[in-house]
Amino acid sequence: LRAGSRPLADSARTMLLGVGGRMRVPSTVDGLSVLTASERKVVELAAAGVTNRAIADHLFVTLRTVEVHLTRAYRKLGISSRAELADVLAS
Image (tube, rainbow, N blue to C red):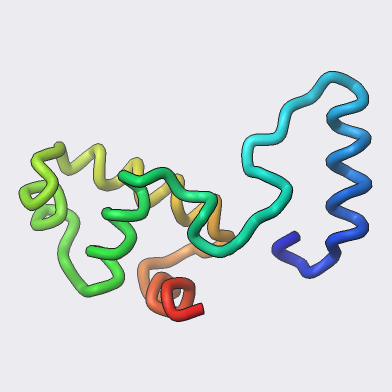
């Protein structure tokens, strides 16, 4: 889906489910809807320029939790850096 080929993604999903596999992300990927509520909060703060330490303090979680949420969000959104978050949030 990230590459823009819905027919190929649908075919791959059908084959995967046909052999008993499971999808980690819904096949109807629509921007930030693939993120959990916690991941979304962390992503929004990070995109606003808040540091990981400040995000952790603000949300009352550990620094490691913030890092894990960002890592998972990057993977789900198909990005690789904090700089790309603003573009994802804008779209």
